Length: 284
Image 1: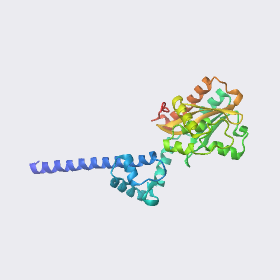
Image 2: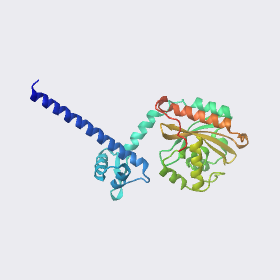
Image 3: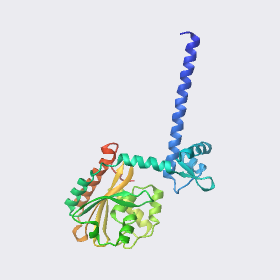
Image 4: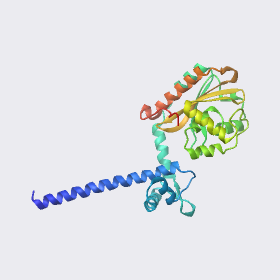
């Protein structure tokens, strides 16, 4: 190879390497912008606000969100602000669908918990429509109808994360701005012994993060509940809980806590079929 040809090839390799590095750097910046939307409070944000959260220049942020409009990854809101769009929601739905346990995989876990506690074992998952929860699976000698609630009461108590051990076990691992939104919700009726004011609610969440589980005594009339979070990596996806008639939950919680945390750990491991999962963080 002649000297001229060798120089030309070296120059081309350098240009290709620089292009790859530039592409990688740009991809990192796009990811930084997307992650900023999950940390910042409120639904929409301006380029300057996102720039401050990411350390990027506002013009870089502006180009990223503008380019994302074509794929609906972002949508433009009022006053030149942006929010995550349906493209981002579609990515999240695909991710959760790929990670979800196989059909029927959680039932043996709940069967074992309900048998150990002689109660109603439930798998709750975080609702996609605002901070809330829905039942994904259940097992036990009691049915949901045994709780003695009207349809309206059940919807209110089940939806909010303010009440119940399962609600707080989920809320404890939400991002701070989502915790603020939950704390601002009014308590539904009946709410029993649930923490009444936002300060007490946040204090309860801190205790849950330290311990790794939550307990509620008769927040649902006649019933007590023990719950533990279900995670996917470091992200909260739901909780496993067991409901028992209040007189059956003794002061010594060693057995119910151990059984509930073990069940939550098994469901956590089922996420992504046992790969890339992590135990709930503590002490946060």
